[in-house]
Image 1 (cartoon, rainbow, N blue to C red):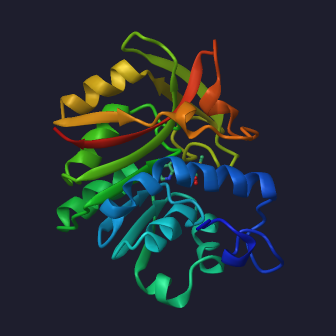
Image 2: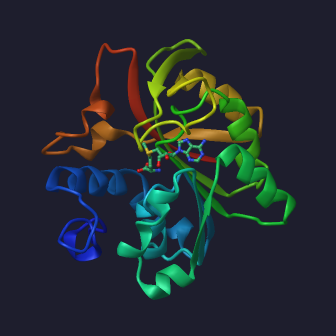
Length: 238
Ligand SMILES: C[S@@+](CC[C@H](N)C(=O)[O-])C[C@H]1O[C@@H](n2cnc3c(N)ncnc32)[C@H](O)[C@@H]1O
């Protein structure tokens, strides 16, 4: 059943301002990388990195996660979550405002443990990919659900870019001078090496096999002959 609907707060007068195309994008991503692992999310203690307005935390709770911890650098996004989470779901969720690089070590030191980690739409907004993987995988999760734009190269490399931190979809502000941030697009061979060196394997989702009637707003997953492309994957212990 679709999670991202007006009835669930994704649109409508009291909900978040999502239009039909944005809902279709989220529901299709849900089909690609949440539904196939829903049985592994059930009863899990889950860490949602860059939790934004809580949309994937909600998806985790609807898949039966026992508890969700979200980390999000922008407080105004965290403040939107009550519009999509019921009181019961809010009781099983905590959102921590902060930079994932600072909060993850604090959680680890405090003894928090997570069975499943969501790393969705974050990995191409940073430059310290190996550090992010080290921090995530130190929790020894049984599963990382991963979704990111990556460099579309067969070589193990990182394509360096930059973006504007004024956008609420982009890198954390205040790390670089002004409102720019240096970011990197890791290639799949590079991601495979980095994960393997922490004892994890990477299984990529075959987006072509989803056989979508409409790929509008999802073209990043189907881009050809471009320097970057969107990929989804599952990271599991080797
Ligand atoms: C493209 S959105 C992705 C949101 C959501 N995870 C998803 O996939 O739909 C990127 C999010 O990452 C947050 N973000 C970026 N860098 C961050 C960091 N270093 N620590 C915490 N949040 C960060 C942004 O504020 C934004 O909410």
